[in-house]
Image (cartoon, rainbow, N blue to C red; front, side, top):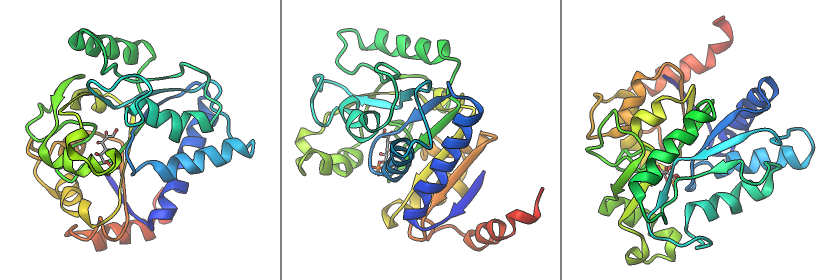
Length: 258
Ligand code: F6R
């Protein structure tokens, strides 16, 4: 696991560089797209490059991590709406190139199985972007999630509903209780993973993710078993890392390592 401590406004550029390099190598790459505030600077930077003609996503495809249950199509907080507003509508992805689990399906279990099939049929995710919840979730795999889980219905914790109330006008009661989420096993199938966390509120979850014991109590810790993960954190999110100086040192001497 690589840990990169950088100012929040630089992280978006660094990850966008990675995405651009991937697309240059593989124009039809499959991107794994997170919602929430953590990836916004990445999406801004990618959109800017597309607008300037320096990057095209015309052949790329994307899969979202999760979706609330019960929000109708077009609802402003539905993740499919959010990803359209914040990313898809600002780049040149073709219509239908980004898919998400259908949280409005009559048969949610079937919708989860279909979603797993769709990711597999696309050849799997080349680069997965992740945020992390204050309770250690990735996607919406809340504490107690099976470390081998696949896409399924989950119940959100009270903490996550409180954290996400800011997207629902501050009204926690408006935040759904349930979601569909890629499982931890699904996420672990991605060929490369980039996790972004900024701000003091993420410091404990980041410390557990990087330095804690692998456990369903802190679901993000499963990433310690993935061979290609980079964790990007700002100083505040890095503030509980016992080995922060070592990660900075590693970063400073990166160019000496082949
Ligand atoms: C969103 C998602 C979540 C968020 C996490 C952090 O698709 O999967 O795991 O990444 O809740 O949210 P923010 O970035 O808003 O702090």
